[in-house]
Length: 148
Image 1 (cartoon, rainbow, N blue to C red):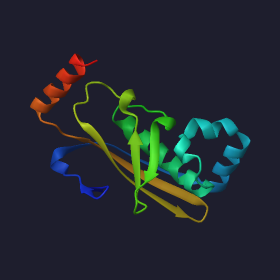
Image 2: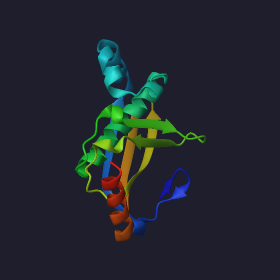
Image 3: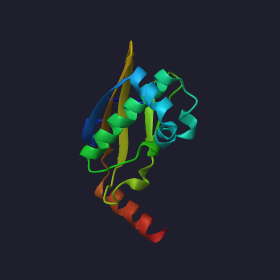
Image 4: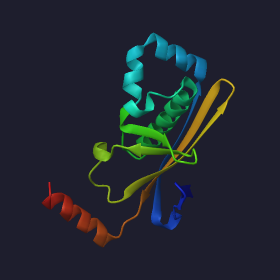
């Protein structure tokens, strides 16, 4: 699978979860207008300058990411998920990993897609944990323990 132009090798990654979400853009826009605090609870500072259609797409990605991470037993808050676009316009996700369990030995990778049609935005997120060797996992544990 492609992520930022890199190939995620399924033999070196564990599937953790999948999430999907659809947003009715006019309803989403009314919710933002009626609850100004909602905007601040959902989006990071760098996301706030987008138009309502992009924000609806980002919200759908965040909801889908929360669902995929929830399946993996890793709950996360909206503002800990950043949705960006690379130079080609392909969406990507960055997640503040401080909220995750310490027993995870691999690195999380996400594959996401956003689509808009008429008054709707839809997004899907697949979450993987990149496998690490036992030696690498032990080294990471030692480094985390020694340098806290």
